Length: 176
Image (tube, rainbow, N blue to C red):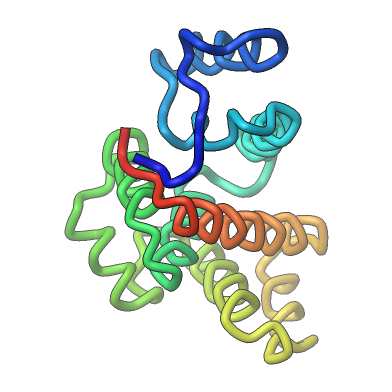
């Protein structure tokens, strides 16, 4: 149980009730991650818009994005997010649990295309030491066909994941 008051679906009114209805239609239930944002419906709406943007990203694949989230969450020890995104890779992308474990041990072993692995490495470098990212890192990605927009979107995704991990860890979110 989170250490902050959340609003259950049957207690929701107004904008929150509408957002919960959308989430329930999409996922079949209201997870603890959504309930945590329930105390601020505007932030829940923003989080939903953020997720929607990346679900339809034209160049960053779902496996790459889930890998970014796992690797960021691994550093933050956010088990909720690690488990959730592992489930996405296994159940949607067809990875095995062994492939997820291998990636967590060594990014170069990620079950991704080479260019996606390089993007993942730069993104995780940015999260761990933003000052360590240099023009050469971006040139390598550009040479592999990534645009500056792709690079920006990937790093933005990772930084938002870091913020989410901090929120989830602070308020002790549990698996739904």
